[in-house]
Every structure is written in C-alpha cells, then in structure tokens.
Image (cartoon, rainbow, N blue to C red; front, side):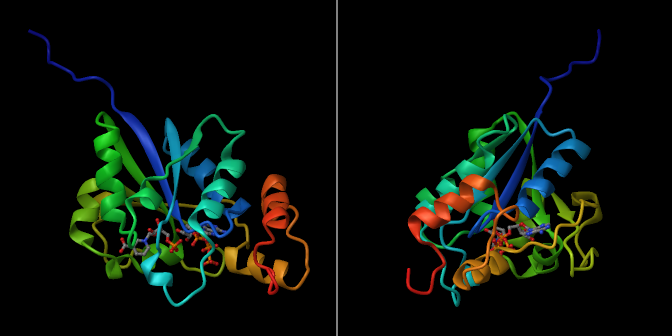
Amino acid sequence: MGEQTGPVKRRLGVMGGTFDPVHHGHLVAASEVASQFHLDEVVFVPTGQPWQKSHKLVSPAEDRYLMTVIATASNPQFSVSRIDIDRGGPTYTTDTLRDLSVLNENADLFFITGADALAQILTWRDTEELFSLAHFIGVTRPGHILANPGLPEDRVSFVEVPALAISSSDCRARVAQGEPVWYLVPDGVVRYIDKRKLYRHDG
Ligand SMILES: Nc1ncnc2c1ncn2[C@@H]1O[C@H](COP(=O)(O)OP(=O)(O)OP(=O)(O)O)[C@@H](O)[C@H]1O
Ligand SMILES: O=C(O)c1ccc[n+]([C@@H]2O[C@H](COP(=O)([O-])O)[C@@H](O)[C@H]2O)c1
C-alpha cells in the first residue's frame, strides 16, 4: 500500500500592521516574501487597537482598513482581513493567527514582520503560543539590524527585501508639514489621505 498523503496545504502569508498609512515598504516586503516563500496569498491585517502604540494617536480603524484595501486592490495575490478590527479591544497576534487558522483550515501560516517588530516579539502576549501558530519571517528594514533575538530557529526565517527607507511615522510627518507623499505610498492612498484630511494638524 502506498503512503497516504493529505491535500496539499495552502501557504498563507499574514502581514499585520497598523498601516497608518500603508506604504510601499509594506508592499515590497509582502511581495518579496510571497515570492521567496512560494506563498499562495498574503493577507494584510490592519490592527484594531495596537496596544503597544497606545501612547500614540492612531487614525480610525476604518480609514486604515480602507487605505490598505486601496493599496492592495490591484494585486490578485493580496487581500485584506478585518478580523483584528471587528474583534474589538487590543490586538494580540495570537488572536489574529488563531482566528485565521480557523478560517483557513488547510493552510500553513507565515507571519511577515519587520526587523524592528521581530526584535520586540518577546514583549508580545503569549510568545510561546505564537510560534506554534505560524512560521515567522523577519524582513530587513533600513536602520534595523536583522538578528535573531533568541527565538526558536526552526520557526523563524530572515529575508532581505529591497531596502525602502519609508515609515508610516515619516509619511504622517510629511503630510502634517505639507510635504508630498507621492511615490512613498500608492497613488490612491495619497488621494484618500487628502480626501479624508488625515494627518493634518488642523484635520
Ligand atoms: N520600510 C519597511 N521595510 C520593511 N518592513 C517594514 C517597513 N515599514 C514597516 N515595516 C514592517 O511592517 C509591519 C507593520 O508596520 P507598521 O504598520 O507599524 O508601519 P511603520 O512604518 O513601522 O509605522 P510607524 O512609523 O507608525 O511605527 C511591521 O512589522 C514593520 O516592521
Ligand atoms: O501580540 C502582541 O502582543 C503584539 C504586540 C505588538 C505588535 N503586534 C503585532 O505586530 C504587527 C506590527 O505592529 P505595529 O504596531 O508595529 O504596526 C501587528 O500585526 C501587531 O498586531 C502584536
């Protein structure tokens, strides 16, 4: 008798972020990891309440969600999930990954995160459980060293992505000062920021 094999599992990338606003650094990271890890899809998951940013002013979740939809709409491999927004309360990645594995029974999850976020992961909630739910992929980010801060080696990989020195904080500061964000964020996101008057001191 031949060996029994189950159905081939889908490979689902998960890109969590506050996306305030989403920018080309996020998109390039997702695209590069999708290619190198042969992912079938990357789902962007805007945070509900990013508890480690509670000292900062964060734009309404609906605005961050819509900007992420606009930014990813043209890529058939990208999608956006509202699970962290609709769950309410502070966003913990254990909840994100648990909910996504229920919704995607036959999938292996790959959580994509920047070098800065990976370096902080031991401060996240339920770190032990995190690594049983997904494989973590740390991507290069200008200004941050890509190093394993003592995480389980079989559950973490590192990927060099074309370096884009873009951050959401910098985009917000530019808009507040009346400087352009064209080509730092997708065109539709520039127009959405303008339409909703986001990030203006008087807005
Ligand atoms: N330019 C970039 N290159 C690679 N990864 C990035 C880049 N910008 C953000 N990331 C990663 O994307 C994820 C989501 O980031 P987030 O939405 O917080 O954007 P951000 O630019 O870091 O925002 P902020 O400046 O407000 O802290 C994080 O894991 C972060 O490390
Ligand atoms: O689970 C946690 O405790 C936790 C703490 C900080 C950040 N995260 C996740 O890390 C991702 C990037 O977060 P941020 O705040 O840098 O945009 C996003 O998906 C967050 O939900 C998760």
